[in-house]
Length: 410
Image 1 (cartoon, rainbow, N blue to C red):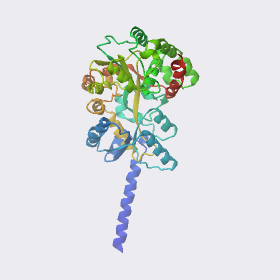
Image 2: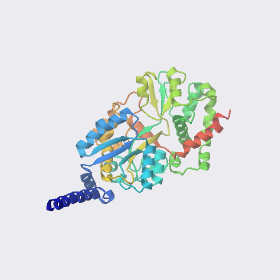
Image 3: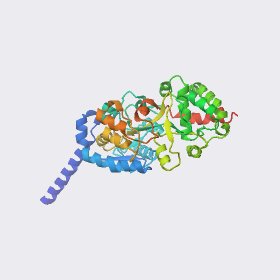
């Protein structure tokens, strides 16, 4: 009998110890120093739920990020492929059920998904400003980090990377690409039929018009910071509609037909029917050149007032069971080494959100000398030209109004 009591006492002690460790792990990170967070995160497992549809992204996470995080910080990173909308549905269900210890520690997120998650209290935070790598290597005053498609981030997500809207052109046909939208208009008029843009139901066509909107207003900063309203949008867009009407007769097929998708525009460009295309990824032309869809003479450019940019972020769910580990893992993913390896084209090729000027000389040289391909603008050009997205409601507003203002206004 004594043996049984002793065994039960021993098991109860183990259970209490485990509960104590879990309680320690659940300590509010806001009450701890970074050294305490890093120490308590060591030896834990962090589950990151993220879209898994790209082999290069998956290889970066599985072959570089996870092994390096384990080696340097003794944290096991488990990648769980899942679409972001499904992640948010799961978190919403757990919140409604009162589940305090969730199975998701990090979410890859931005845009409308972040807005919904933040408005429904599905995220833990603010945590971003506690991350040493963010405070040391990132521009903390950047609009790109303060707003996510017009929603204030308020420290509830940390910038992981970004893509930018650029134009591609055939340098054998176009010797000097335009530097402004006014110069683009002159070029289109001088080269009838050699330029067009996708219908704004397509994401890239819509981005082209949002890029134009930025160029025709007094200050893009106002568009980013101003809360969306139809009245404000209509007032700001008057010059944009005039511009599109002015170039319409000189477009491919005289503006009577528009490519339905970016893929269709790329095909026209690859065939030589038009001499420019565009896209929301500054490095996208490289693989299209390799696949001989685009001519090898393809190059990219950005115009004033800048390049529309889309920052993507990492966030922590409200009920993460390992918030300390999540913060330590995110801090690692924001580090110069992790960002550099993410930038390399042999893995992901995703542009960095880091501020190159804040890096030590040796690391700065690594970033600026990395060859992303002849068609990709320099890292400095992209960083200097970056313009954050405005409220996501502009996307639908442009779709609805373009048909009346441009397409049906023959």
